[in-house]
Image (cartoon, rainbow, N blue to C red; front, side):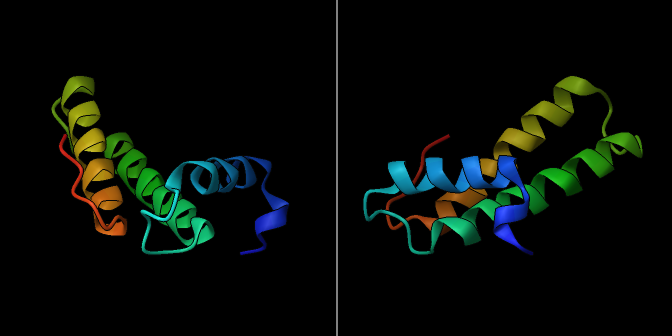
Length: 79
């Protein structure tokens, strides 16, 4: 994916780069792409009615994102 083609992805990458401060075990673009893919997948599941409601979806989304980011950090993230 051409990173420069997506303004939202560029903003996400820039934010990750500013906040990671040597804690991340991967380049910002890789983390942003993983976040993007996770978000797309979760929304697809929600739209396919795989959750009992919005509250369950939001909790699952936050949990999945927390675990994804924990996997990219050298330090444990507590939800």
